Length: 76
Image (cartoon, rainbow, N blue to C red):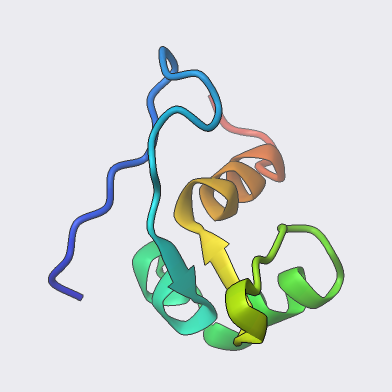
């Protein structure tokens, strides 16, 4: 994947930066996960999906990363 995506930083208010919607496959590649893992999160409602114009489900990279960070256990 050659495109770079900017994850909103801590000083950005939610919704102030236009963020590209990714397919589940693109999101999986961006975070280094398997497609079916992202698909399962979306189907269970753990990450929100967007279906503009009645198309396939799309996700925001920042929301996928936020879910992964919120489920982190242990560590420093």
